[in-house]
Length: 219
Image 1: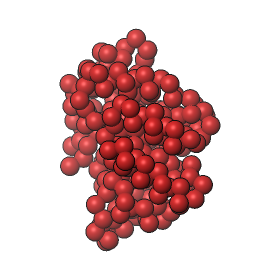
Image 2: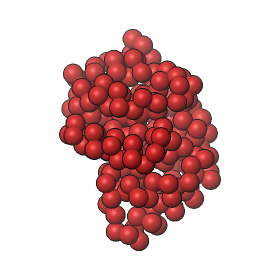
Image 3: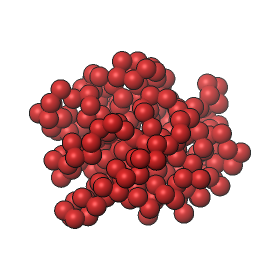
Image 4: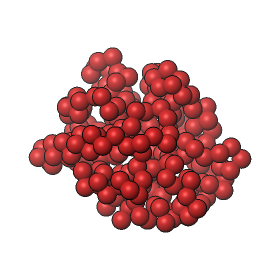
């Protein structure tokens, strides 16, 4: 079954409460929290996402899907563990070596949270194969991380397919999440490639009826 994780990156100030309630009513499966530090990626949403996710936690029981696009992953894990997320995902590119990646996996699990690893479009999918037995999700970026509203890079569908084939061949249980530029025109191709969690922000938040879009993405 395909699930939808709605990015709250483009939610406007002053409209948070109304938007979050509407998303829950429309049956999004997760709230996707895009955490950026202005260093690993250009934009800085750190404080805004901490504020938004803290607010969501007070009004909703829906799972929080935290995507860390930061250099200082350890500090961010501590900061965002306080909002009791379902999963915390970090970028393999932000790790100095594989030993650090394993330490971060352990730290996230110690905070009673599922673990995800994300890769940028230019990173070979093979780089995360050895971590797969120890994590719960791989987040494949289908755009360059750091900005909303981008167009999906079609080459990333091959990367998702390659990962799906490897996971199935080796009997590994791991979710495959795709993030970036996903909309009703391309979601079928993303699902066919093997992704079972779709992140969408602009496509949902800019719609008149959130439920219509979310239902179509899940179909």
